[in-house]
Image (cartoon, rainbow, N blue to C red; front, top):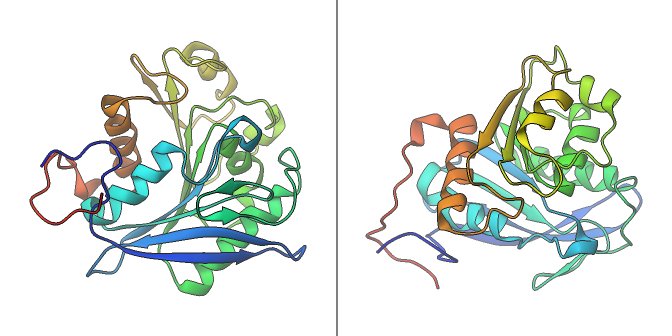
Length: 240
């Protein structure tokens, strides 16, 4: 069968709870390869909750549905404070990216406690702001930024990544609603080491199977390149 849409490939999936230092509980899910240990970990940070972003935003849901099986990756998704999804509602209230620093820290604490290997922050839209603002505080291999708007991350916070050994990979859609490739090259010029990928035909929400596959391929290219090319067909069991 063709791998597309909301298909869930085999994985060990577990509902999890993350605990912040300001005593909130955040709801989430961890997806692991079915019968192997993961080679790396994606800690995903969802789009803006006040605009409908949550842990099930489609690229993140599809990463969790496919990449444990296709690339041996662990995928952690969670709702930031005050965000609701079918999994449930995280405690607290949206704070515009300020106290969400504690949410990122709770996720990284969980990764460390579970002994999950080689963590990367994968942010989408609002999630890229959290990755840029707070990722440097944590033991990660790098950040992958999908459709960064650069509304909340300041120029100084972006430039702070210059000279950092951890990778910065930026996927910018050609037709993004907020930041398109030419402006993105200017805004990220302060990080000479950053890899900026302009995605022809791409849009902010990465709608459609072609864009989904491109995003997942670029994530795997950064984190686990030996798994490429990602299969587009699956012969085994699926869920949904």
